[in-house]
Image (tube, rainbow, N blue to C red; front, side, top):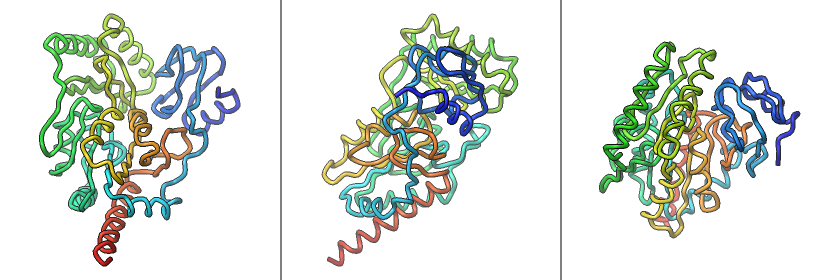
Length: 332
């Protein structure tokens, strides 16, 4: 289904300050991270002005229901599951989005909830992030769970680590790309380059919006010569240079699920970004997914929670439900 002018105007007014004309004209998106659920063919909606030839809306066209509105059913599924697997994004899900990546510390109360869940029988936990594996593990600091870094390029479980390492040639290429971008964008105040091993993140959260188009343009131009080896992706106020290989959070979730008993397995995935959509699709049907943020935007997620505080409440409720179920089983 194509989005018509009136529907697009409504979405624009509810979501972001933007001037837009539908149907082959130019659309200026101030913050593209607020448009994570639209697939634009021929050209992507990105920072700045692009020609939009068509916009396709995903299958889930309605407003996503708040998770706690359907808690009676959710609680029953969690209680009845023989094996429960919680997949949790980090930034924007377990901890609020902040101005600098190093300031996104995992709240102590969240850590306590995660530790209590980890210690419950037949409950599995995985933290999945675009951060590097080392950074993610340091931020969360909980043993005995699975960590997934760089959107699935790095996976560490209690038994060991799987990490894709760039070849020396690829490493040199990324170093060259990084240096070129740093030289081209060094005059822009607030821009932040984060080198994460196989991925380069360019954060613009602290950059004035008048520079947004320039940043996107420079990255696109730099990647022209590397199209078959490197690609650009976007998240919330960040653009990333990644190896042009087949990996994403959904693929990581699929691989991890193969390592646990499938009988009576209920996987639940919580995330707040476009990069989580692949994982939402993987758990659809067998489990359910939760988008963290406003429920007005279209997503593949089955439910939504407003913010990390509600995620914390959900983790607490999961503990209580699983404990109650265990006691009931023991009494029987």
